[in-house]
Image 1 (cartoon, rainbow, N blue to C red):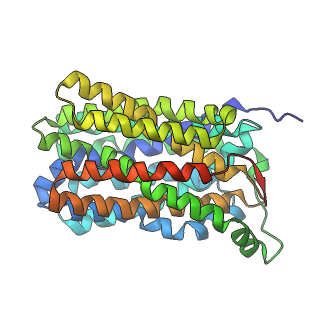
Image 2 (cartoon, rainbow, N blue to C red):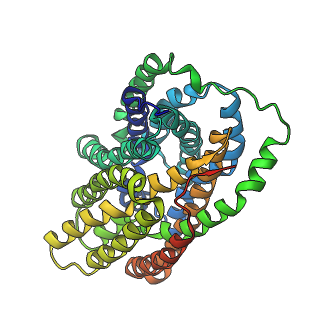
Length: 387
């Protein structure tokens, strides 16, 4: 029997994703100012980004917690917590303070992203790919708006005044409470009865997740250099903060389109083909960006990179949720652990290369690594599987 796609529920969680991730996108645009203010290196910047991802090590445990509790309240509370942590970065007067605030934001981020896709899966019916695209598009739209919001805040109030945009997150959590407090009762998951369930699920999926991790190790390099380091790369090239912020927003705006289309496309032509095509085109347009000589060609290449560089997100997420299991939240937490863990390692590697060889060499290395991801797509099954 065909399962109905619930537009209201999918839209609600996607909007929650957007509100939350507006704040998580603040770090990259303000990095040039933080580096100037506190005198930190690219390797130290990488550690700051890793601070946001350390909580990902606990994702499986958080996933089990969400599996046994009503996880709607994680989704409701986290926009407010993340808003407070990220907007206080401008007031930080030491590297340690930055690290602590980003660690708190990382915990909040993990608590949001673990249960939310599970709700989307239920609400999407038999259109999981499209539902995941809507969810991921909410995050990409946030990363389009985030750089513009924080750059505007800096223009009006300075770096120390960005705390003034905090109320948006607080109001969002309040609205989400009233919108989600009676969210579909089907999402309430009862405690697993069989003691061996977790071990059984892991034993049946570890090969799948190893392959996903290998793919992400190579593929994540482009995302890192084009999101975290793009404003810094452009300011080092002589562009101002507004130009860098707008460039990042252009990249993220087309990322919204890419994530929205890729999941739906993967429902029709298969996950594997979608990953291969988007990965290849992302590399080609990345080369175009690196050797662009004019503003027009730079913005054109950024637009095309954004269209394809984020396309893998909803496809990989759909692959995980294609696994037929009674523990989708737990499996999603495993995926999120791999995702954040791999990205953390890549951020540090790119930062190390940037410190020692320059950002241009860092971008060239990212292109080479992304090429290595393409052959792995042939081993990623696009077929739904049962555990």
